Image (cartoon, rainbow, N blue to C red; front, side, top):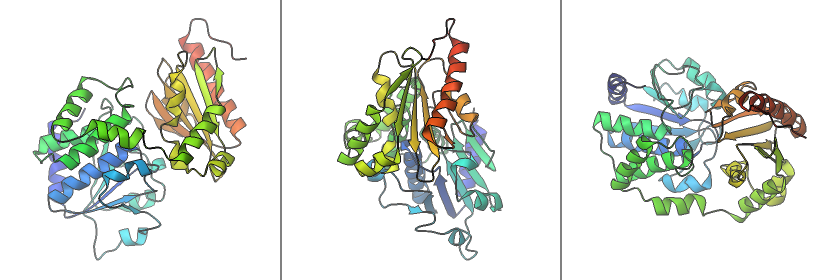
Length: 342
């Protein structure tokens, strides 16, 4: 758990810095985007010069959080610019990850960074990147850690900050459907609503705002559905041809894996996405006894017990065999009469 002293040190670190870099993991989700926006708003209100730098485009359904699109590393801003001695950063802040594998293109820069690094994260997987780390694996979202920091430091909670943090928490709990939703989550969201967050409009912007291309991509994914282990595991695939035929982007896959969990028997889900470089991105979810983080870690990935992911070598058929083998082991461990996968 994070102590009051830890929050005090983080606040002092921020208040002693004038030029601050803020970043998060590649393929930023709602928690990452919301946390970046919220902390950037806090830093700007404190009179700090804040530079948010992301590693890839934000999904279009989170664009409403940003007053202007953040710089993308390698497109809008270079590593050389980050290293500019004429305007050095006093502090780097990493949000919603503590893993070099999730910071492609930024890793070498952070290893050589000779100023303090502050990490705020709620994942178990950790490379110890921070000089000071606010780590709380019991938190449903990194946004809750940022909210606690704001509370402890006595900084203002504006409507804009509250909205961003509400998005962070609501999306990482599957709109309060996942088992990481606890009383702390709901009490904090009540405070965010009191501060100006709008749940109805937020839901509409994120979950009822599909483009036709994203909807076609979801249709292709649902058409690939396979059920294994007596219906306990749902497996779906998306190939490069599916993205081409639907005109969808790879960012359009966010949260699509959860659609199959409407099936009553499904306790776990796996979505295999064929990427442009030939690898296979595997997203894993669990609502039962299966610990998908352990599966992801076997292939160099990570995440949470109920939500994790990893990259595997292609083709998809090979990746599926490897993941199915690990699910078979987990089901055998947790069920007195393990199901036989045909």
